[in-house]
Length: 475
Image (cartoon, rainbow, N blue to C red; front, side, top):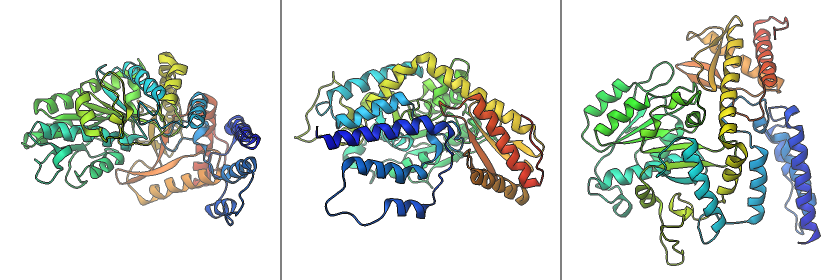
């Protein structure tokens, strides 16, 4: 390799290690404005190019002020894992190897890594071993894959080949979804031709759980093929739908049950939390994300389908120039849509190796305990309200009052703005039940009790500044 390219790689390694060592103390908020970032990246494109190592230095200098704290211990805004160094190291190799992970013949090693990682993942999550697994970009594409398999199989049972004949004239499928389903579910339904407005929205309780009785009444009124989408780990509250009951009702009508487990399916890897997702094993398909609790680098999701034939029918593409690997060898392109994609098996395999069952279980339990600790401490401060029962790693905070009021909406926005200005911790807002709330997610492998305790103090201080009280909060 040319010395100039080796120098670029050395520079990237040096800057990456420097960032890794510093990330615990870095601000959780980006420090540069968009205009500043445009200026840093901007300027005319050169005619002759720039030395590779210089390019990498300039890239790091321009980008780092615009990075948020997702890779550090102080990020509580969204359910984003923190790119564990083992996965990052595997991803570095993946990039250097430069493999197209879509086909067996283009990269046999990735096909083997995906095969083993799939087996380990099913064992870890206590799902049927006969399931097929597609390695996707994340939750939205995992839903797309699983629901495509569901659509194809449900219509095949009606004598309709959707892969060959499309949806024009096809029997109508009734889709039932909890009213608090994640937006990625509705995106996938839209991409697959189901539409967002045609679904039957099933009422939910105060925690966001689907009402199983309402689901039963809804599906009793339909004769069409039935697709039910349930949730393991509501994105705001962490709540789980009553999966056992939902599975019973769905399968009585010969329907297909899909479970959005992007977050909560990982509870099944932790003995003390596995009961939350009881009944998930009865579903027909599942999604979960590697870049959440497995802490893989972006991007990584898993589409898991019980009926491997339905999965393969929905995804397989054929062309004379594409080699056929045979049923005994995994061909990754048979389980996801892409014909060109990253070899995602390597990072997943490496992280499952590094953590082991006990490591993943311990991390899930630790994050759940830290969420309980933070929610309890915040709720003890007058005027701070925690709105949900904390069973997993997610909870909602409201400032001023737990009731619907413009005053508390504004107070909550003001606290979030204070935290954004202070910059050391990252929290986000959302609308919930007609109220503005602050969402809290404990998900980073790097987050410790000390980080949580400091976060409690920072939030309480922000609330006291909003109310005009400036006394020091108790630890």
